[in-house]
Length: 211
Image (cartoon, rainbow, N blue to C red; front, side, top):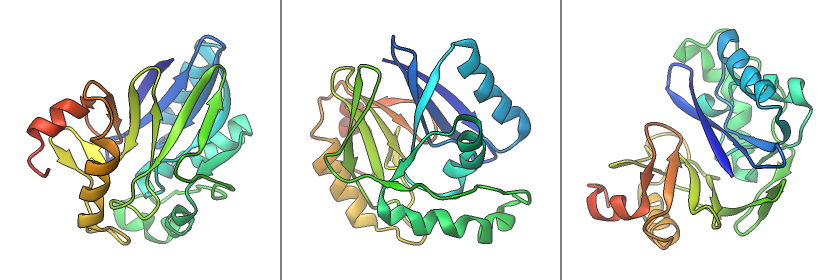
């Protein structure tokens, strides 16, 4: 499995494309907002001759969903999130202007729901869903045991954690889920977060000041 990261919009959000030798791919958290961002994502997929088959959301805060309509209209693929994230998604257009996003058209929310222990497959690759709320009510992390990587959204960052002062945030619950669900993964597991650079479980266990 290969992982390509794009950093989009004013929040410097990380959008991921995961693909394998079959050239099937999944897109995770499309934050592309400006036309050039959408074109960057589209060009990479075209240049690599990839076939998008699923759109996945770790959670549905504004910076992670801005490219929803673009991806769905471009590739006509099913979209997945946790059911508790649908209200988060629906609320985005109402508060988007507060952040300077005045041309938001995110389209329909995901229709397919993810839960703890679900598996998402594409090509010869399988991702395991880890339910880890706290930053957002329905935060999901996508873990690939074979490659020893986790796409963690805004749960755990290098030397930091997801903010919990947004609606639905719960600081104690976030810490509990990091300790009980992420820190139980192998220490050399690479964490690809929703912002900033990758880190590892072992590094965060030893160095993260919040934990």
